[in-house]
Image 1: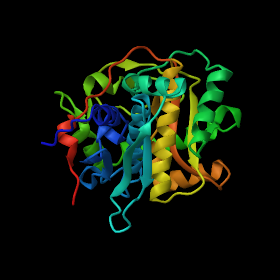
Image 2 (image 1 turned 60 degrees about the vertical axis):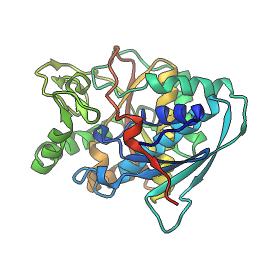
Image 3 (image 1 turned 120 degrees about the vertical axis):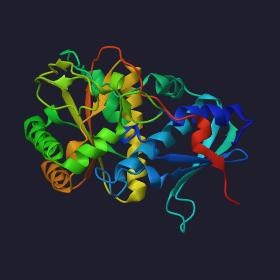
Image 4 (image 1 turned 180 degrees about the vertical axis):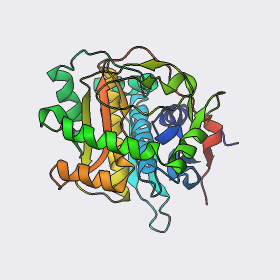
Length: 318
């Protein structure tokens, strides 16, 4: 077991493990040295069926990296970040070193405070409209990380993208290998990863779009008819672009949390190459879609569990 004596690093690790990940797989390892954290992709936790190339896993690690940075900033230090610091080790995604003392801004404090309150809300949202100021804040959050956020209803794209999501959902429902993998990560009896029944949400009995159902619950609910759906995009799509996309994804999610909103994902079209390609074409064909959000106002829920810090930390290789 690796123990760190640094309260700043411990706070950063506790924030990092709260990042979202596909099926709550938590595909990260943190290697510790004095005043430094290496973020490593845990390739054993890449989902073989829905994420065979590890794209969603790298997004998750990018989100963990953003949490590290805001926690360090809120603790009063600068986080010096280097992406892909060792060319011969592609699983080493980033190195974070504690820099000089820093006076955190109010924005950094708010984002850090939102980390433990953010979770994927898979239950129905209310029909309350998202106001222009909140929409603008989320678009700005993506732009600050070099990404774009396309709010589909503002571009007349909600219906065609909804059709893609429904088609991808149908394909995955008919895929026995995908369903078997999904069942493996649906945890009926608790655990420290996967999606337990209490966080899986009900089955949909209606609504514009299907929300992925994890749990064995027999509860059936009608979902919102007019969801705010957004697509996060990046100019390029290599491994480092996906890490950066994860950072942007998390800044958007924490910004939404900070203004009292809930979010979850429509991952279905992103996990099938043909529908992801069609989504890119619908968005104009230039930028690469990385994730699809469902945003709005939800009822209180419960975060999914996380592995302990001890389970995801090891000493840095020499």
